[in-house]
Structure formats: C-alpha cells, structure tokens
Length: 293
Image 1: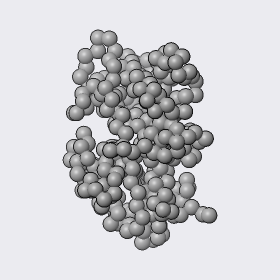
Image 2: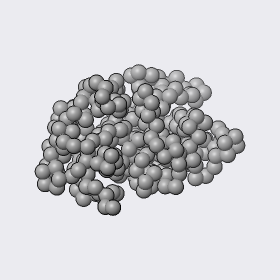
Image 3: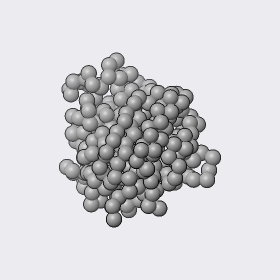
Image 4: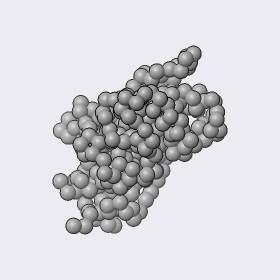
C-alpha cells in the first residue's frame, strides 16, 4: 500500500520547517525563523493551508519543541507548556495548525519525532529500543522503548537532568528553571554564554568544549543506565555542526564512566543518520500514522 500524502511541521527553537511528503520522500519544503508565536504559527498555518488546497494531503504531523501537552481531551493538548522560550507558554500549536488542515492530526516533541524517523530510516534501524538526543538551541531526549515512544505524565524531559560539574567549575548555567542542568550547561546558547562566542567560532581544542562533553557524557550515561537502549543517537545543530568533533569526546568519556559495567563500546553512540531532516521526516511519519489510524 502506498504511503499517504501528508504535511509535517517541525517547530524548533530556532527555525520552523514545513514539508509536504509521502513516506521519507519530501516533495516541497518551506522554512522560516521561530520568532513570536503569532507570527510563527501564522506563517506555518498559511503554508499548511496552501498545500491543503493545492494537493489535498490527508494528515498532519507536528513535531514541536517542548514541553508540550500530548494527551488528547485535556486542556493542555497541543499547547506549549512551561517553556524557557519567552512568550511561548500556552501557545496553541495544534489548534492553529489543525485549523489550517482539518482532519487527522498527531503531535509529539520534535526530538521524539526525530527518534521515530531514525528508527524507520536512519541510525536506529533494526533496534527495538533507542534514545535520540538533540543538542542545539535546547537539549532534548526522545526515548523509544520496545518500538514505541515513551510518554507518561509528560514526554521525557531528560535535557533538564542535573549534570555533575567539572572540578572547580562554578559557572551557574543558563536554564531559567534549573541553572546548571544539561541544557543549562551544554546547549548552543549555554556554550555561547560561557565562551562569549557561538559554538561555530570555537576550535575543536578550545577548553570551552570540556564542560560540554563532561555534562553530555554524564547525561547520556544516565540514559544508558535507566532506559537500557540498544543505541543512543545524537543530532541537533551543535552536535552535527560546529561541534561535530564533540561526539568522539563524549563517547570516550561515556565508555570511561561505564568501566565495563554495561559493556558500552564503539557504535553505541552514533550521529543522526538523517541529519537535519530527522525532525521534518519525523513530522511526516506522525502525519502518516494519524492518517492511517
């Protein structure tokens, strides 16, 4: 059976991407900065409505930065919750975009959508359980256990785990809720705030990478111990862009932390195979699942 034609919207912390596609094939794409909720969602809704009129897609998938409400029938469904992103708390993402394409709709976090896409077409193919971690504007974890995305009271928010500090490091971190959590220490804005310049301007040997690798290694090891994934996949603009050299540093520290207990080795930690398309393809996958439900 042919995959349904659907629209996917990836609402990220820095940029928003809308795609029209079938399966993993993207036919059309639009992109704009994620700014205030009104203008950003207006752009997205206009594009979704145009494709709905011209191509008659049969489902809509939304991959949104979080935290976001995921339980249908609750007042929070499809709305941004207590986000550190100014102005976005309470934004009705699913309501605005769903009005532009009435019909089947599915929404999940951008990182969980990317995890599902990596399972279908990327670095987690053949796995039953895996974790996808994005390191970019924020840090998020998407957890797939026995082939199903993990959702409980909320979705995973392991990017806000407290991170052990390097000896002598007293920098407070930038998370407005937790200060020196993973996101507060190792996200793109955290790197820029500590170093005084963006990650793209840091050389591979710059000492500013040391606390980033240290925090990420401890966060990923916590995921390895608690979730027991077959693989951890890392994506996001920092991890795959300016910090591409970061993953080998993190892997070395991760294996050292394990001390042979879990038997972690080369290949357990992998870069996202779908790169920047993991999120948009995940949104298409969500839309296809909604259309087929």
